[in-house]
Each structure stands twice: as C-alpha cells, then as structure tokens.
Length: 260
Image 1 (cartoon, rainbow, N blue to C red):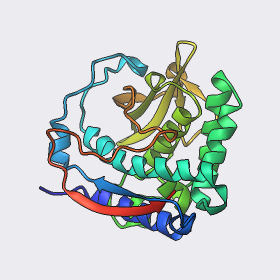
Image 2 (image 1 turned 180 degrees about the vertical axis):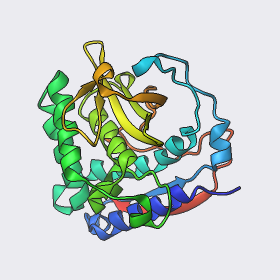
Image 3 (image 1 turned 180 degrees about the horizontal axis):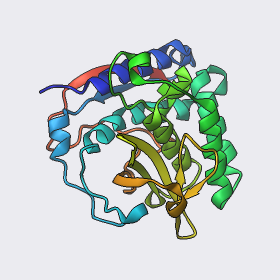
C-alpha cells in the first residue's frame, strides 16, 4: 500500500532534528531506546472505527471526515516528539532549540488558568511562526507538520499553527475533551483553527487573530472537527507507544535511536 508522503517528509525532518541535536550522544552509560516508527497507509486509517459521536464547537459531531487520515497519520510523529520533549525535561543541556521553544510556550500556559491560558498559547504560537506555504517549505501542496517540525523552521500554514496550539494546550493542562482542531470555510478555501472550551463556551484560536473569538463573532463556517477523544494525541509526559495498532497494515518507515 502507498505510504503517506506527509508522514515520510515530516518524519525525515524530525529524525534529523533528534539526531542532530546531540541527544543521541548524551549519557553514554545509559541504555538506548529504539523507537520503531510505523506509518499507516491512508486507506487503512480511513477504516479505523470512528470515536463515539459527541458534540463540539458549532454543534459539530466527532465523526470520521475527509481530514481524518491526515490527523491519524500525524500521530506517529507526535510520539517521536513526546520522547524528545521528555528527554529535554530530563536533561535540558542537550535539548534541540525547537523543543526548548515549544516547552517554553507550554510552561507559560501552565502558569495561567482559564481564558488567560488559552490566550497565552494562542498569542505565543502566533508569534513563534511566520506564514509560509507547504509548497515553499516542503515542495508539496499539502503537508500537516508536527509542532517541533514547525518550531524548527519557524514557519507554517494554518494547520501547522493549529496543530501546534492543540498539542501545546493539551500539554498545558486543557483536557482533550475540551479541544478540537477545526476545518472551516474561509472564502473559497478550507482553513484550520483550534477551538478550546472554557466554562462551557467554545473559543476560537486563529493564526490570523491574537484575540480569542467566540463562535458567534468568528464569522466562520465550520466544516469538520478533529481530535477531542481521550488519548488521541500522545502525551509528552508519557513514554510513546511503539507497537502497531491491531488490525492495520503498518509498513515500517524507519527507526531512530535516542539515548536517555
């Protein structure tokens, strides 16, 4: 089966980031952890059972949609990043600059509560990334980059902002049930934002606006919702999973060695 070019391209970026950072040479007496990264074919991902239907922002139900495969294909890369961040927190001296910047955004958010936490992460991610198309950065029309990939380049398009915010909010303590990555209609194009629920109200985090928006004042037409299910994004405070999901054809893409 065809392996997603999205995952292959971003995985190469992350493997270079991890190995070039000096993490692999730290603590020579420590055991090596072998992270087998498995990349699912998009056709297999589409057949994954949909999560229970719940209502999110704009009344959207959490159902499988045309962007679900891209979201699921991103998860193995988030597992790699979870390990990198875990190692950075244990030994900051060998931490890649991109991971250190991302951790700083998360930690700033953790110091705040409620709307202030959401607003801080929205502002920090917006300021950390400059707009750039996937074609200009990666030579492909569409690529959903993981947070450290985006922070390493300092550039991305709308879904790269949204993915970084989603993961940062989760790591800052926002429950995943209160988070959604939304695909909305903006003119003639699809646009990605994040929505976070605070005190029962869904707020919109958009890379085009430093201000938090409500559903009513956003002026957006929401199309699809992603995420929101417990453990749909690997936690950066836990060891990443290395086993393939049962029942799926997961061709092995590559393996990375990291010292801990």
